[in-house]
Length: 272
Image (cartoon, rainbow, N blue to C red; front, side, top):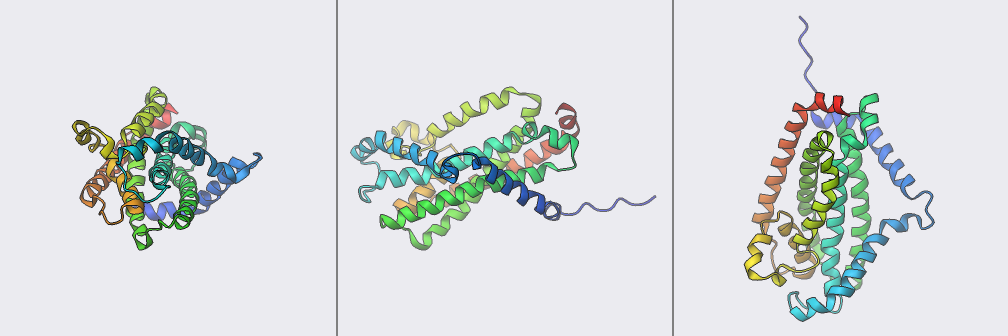
């Protein structure tokens, strides 16, 4: 009896598909705006319009409440950018990962492309948008004299933590969505609710004291507050112990979702 050859590590298996992943991500980014009149402007226009609307509606209210540190006339706009850009990336990544199997059903059934290569494409495409928008945000911070200097490096663990949360949740939802299609319909509603329960448009201090502890159970709250502190209150340290707990929770979610996926690989293929 010939012993089965050991399975290569996950990183090597992913590397074997690197050409496909890079080509697919580049093709999607090119085709997304190829026939539009404004082209790549669409990458930054929606968040800009959203930030302008929220700034117009809420800036006076938040300034009057005194819930934000006074860092000049653009304080609230900067506060919004820090939370909104990263929320939109998180929301898009989670939604794409949640549709990993149902959106690529034909590819997964009729080709040998593995699901983790498609997941890597989703991560790359959404990360490209985040990088472009973050670079523009950095230029704005320099222009309004609020560049945080080396403290900007603290964005890295926050982004990693948020990415793990999106992938962990998304993979679990992707498995459920194959068998329960209502999950796809409910997800946008859940994300809307989650957005308003996260202090992105409003600061935590503006929430009535009786509800603040409830909002703090939201795993995205310390991450959003971390981004906002880096640019507006660099003297106040982010809540790293709580962010560490969220990171550990995100890793656990990834492991549980992978286990759920492995146990249902056959039924998923049959159901697609």
